[in-house]
Length: 104
Image (tube, rainbow, N blue to C red; front, side):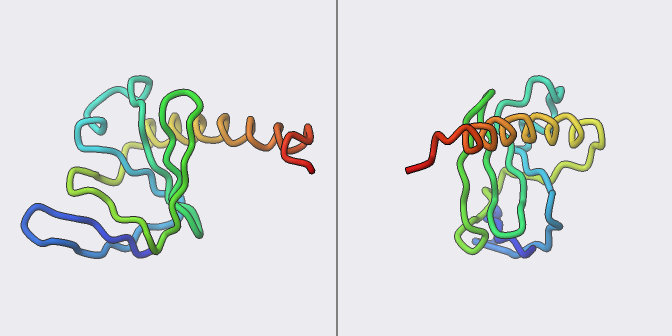
């Protein structure tokens, strides 16, 4: 997926990021995985932003721009940990749907 990113020296550049890429602030990228509060996952059509233990927001790919202080995670341990957290939050949403919370 092509993602726009603000940078300090050039207003915006584009980067090719594969689906499933995890995006963090440079500050969070230096922390232990268990201490990361906010992270973003690139999907096929949206970027999913996970905040805390249960908050989720989405942004269409064509409207999403990474901040200049954001980086793509390359540490396999951090990636595994954060994807597990993301799946847990998404499973809760799926369970709510199956329980009929969103039915008319």
